[in-house]
Length: 438
Length: 147
Image (tube, rainbow over all chains, first blue to last red):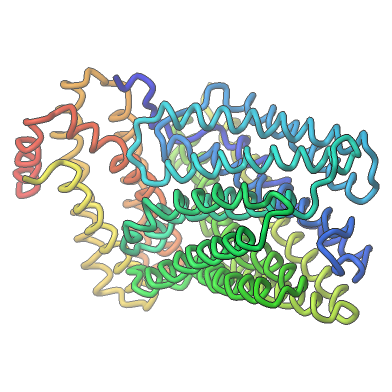
């Protein structure tokens, strides 16, 4: 009955590590694009530079980390092990990296072939990922409350992909380019269905776990993610261009519900954090707080943009969503995950090698892998970079260069911290292997 | 009637709180209280491990026939946690604040991901597999606790 169940700890470290390592590089590239394109980029959603950096961030940075993390989480959350994990990771990553890079390049230097090739590579990567994850979760006997939400998020990724392919083919002049209706839908499914629902599903486990808080209320644990998906489904037919005012208004009402749902998650999280039993100062807690405050700001900006019809607020909503909410949560999680995984794998390796406590060999614990100072520095950089970016949207002439530079510093620092940690892992792993009695 | 999941999950939460409090005490350099609480925490963890290793896991293995599976992984993780508990003790004795807090951080996450697997999979499976005997097992574990 439970033949498939495996609680084996984790896939090999290289499986998530490769995704975590390449992610900040894309972030730095996004910053460089902003730096060298300048303030014209920020003028509208549709400038080549804007499309390039949004996809650089959403696909190259955020989705890379999430795809890597999900492959890591599966045994813990669902009791399922992916067969041949290194091969699977190599396949996905090997298609993903060039696909995303090509897409970003294609936005900057449009050419049909580039869009088609990028679409093919990204599709292959995502289809591989989605099918393996959904199949594994389907087989899972786990009662873990994150599982339904993760399934929904992964399905949303697939839906976002389909729309993305259609848009890419539109840019390649193979299909008509259904802008803004399909773009808006693509944005909604991607940001809310994939990213926000995944964050909510993971938060349900991780916030009580890492911060020792009570559990989220039932409506968050069981109903919030399905509700968001239902709202997205209802919105989807309403994106059809040329519908009457009634349908457009209904669409607005759905947006209000979505914003309310996201806000209530933010409030629920902040309230849990306020009563957390774990009192020790930790940048991780601050990353979550910052993320939630940003999420509240997103809802406010979104409603202003709906009411005022000013495109600036629309862009600002997405900017705060990505560079504030998602960036804070993902960075906070990444630092903990990487430092824990490195300890875990080295600990297991030194056990297996029978050299625990011998020859003065000490497996570094989490803070020795990534220091508290590193987390604090990233937190501050994130905050100033975000503030600068928001200013750059309002006063592009004055703040664009500074925002780009700060972003570049932020991603470079993250790349250094993660890269250094991973490098030390492999050095120590080799040392353990060398110390292993034959 | 308390099922296995309910009983053991409650135990998890109590240990979580002890660890969080001990961590806070050390961060404030209140070594005397930290000493006491860490000892209590250590004992609670050992009792919990014992309840699982001596009572719950054997019952589950016998009923399900899965000897090399999930319970084996849990036993291995207990060992990893025991090693961290030893390091915690050492840091406490030496009054090494940084080392202690580093150890609580790592121990916390280790415990949490371990608990996730137990609460998400092993305990519900045990409740199912053991059925009517689950109550019996809980009683046996409670007896073990008071030994």
